[in-house]
Length: 536
Image 1 (cartoon, rainbow, N blue to C red):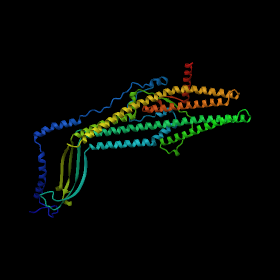
Image 2: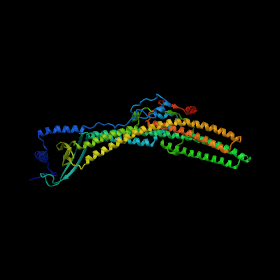
Image 3: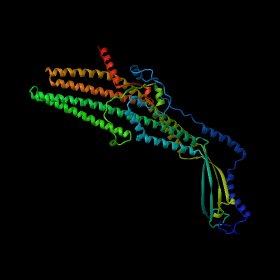
Image 4: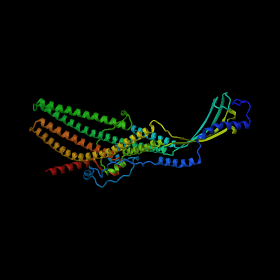
């Protein structure tokens, strides 16, 4: 018997080639025969397959957990009564939209320039933007999993003994062609993963806006704290100058024999103590300036802000209603998207209990000779379908569902916590502004009384009616009260920025009532006079 093998020098006849192909196909048909279904069985399988598809597609609709939302803020009414009324307009949901140029309500060009620099070079914003790009790339990856795949391949194999009808001598087979595959998403596993990836991208976009709002608020608060430090430094240095004048006067009086050396020592101690306070404020200002440099993305050595008067306007921000906070705050929106993404991943984990169905196809050329590889007679093709369903997996699918459910429970708790924290932050700042306004009025009264007491004490000391110790006490009290008034004013600015951040930003300069520094001071003095009148 003559055997034809791959390295034969003479080409086989057409009849031999046909018989060889039939012999090679026979084992494949024999293997497929046990799986052939009768017509009645196929009729039974069709309704079952349809039921499986419907069961895989039937999932619980995505929904958010209930969050206790009050009808109004507890502290909003009292603040509105003492500041402004009728200035609130409900905002539409815009969790991934820019938060608005709210800082321009402070009417400070230096602050405007700093916020613009931070928007361009802040490293936290750059990191958040990079995370958004990562999430979008993962979304494109999930979308690609649902699309057909097409590939080009080629190879060469050398084998022996795999076919009983061929020679036991080694044979070579060369092939080249295209292959295609497509996983049918009959039970929604891939679509749910795509939905989860899309929600993750939305969450990252919302967190980018949250980071931008955070950076804007930190720039504003740091800058306002620096201006408050400038004002306090000027006040303390004015006090040092006044103490120096008193020290020189006391030294002349000692030389004249009018006072003892103890009075000079006391005055020298006051001068040195206030100089120490001024140096501490210088250190505080340097730290704030360095923090601003980092926020705008610059090295502290290449950044500086000149000393200037504190003339920033103080805006009055409307609180609105609690339900709009959940719409406006980007961090709450990110928590919402995380909950919905976790729900989608639970559905994807449950879909693992259903079969995976994939369609495959291939076409190309196969030949034992390289010269005959791309001839029409060497063409080959094939199509197929693959259905796979694990029967025993050691509890892997159940563990996957349990893990996804645990992630969902965590996301729900995080969403509730974020929502409640949002309400708390707004209430904190509203109550803080209300109490700070009352504190500013009381402190204005204290400053006025301390200044009057210092004036009277100085006059009586020069006339010899009281000792120098009484004058020092009066001057300390006057300086302490002025510094406390500045600190209360600074706290009002800090609380206003914090309220804007707690509400999710989104206001322009025309959306809030604005008080200038002089107007705010006049308001405090009027409130103080009213309190004094009520007390009398």
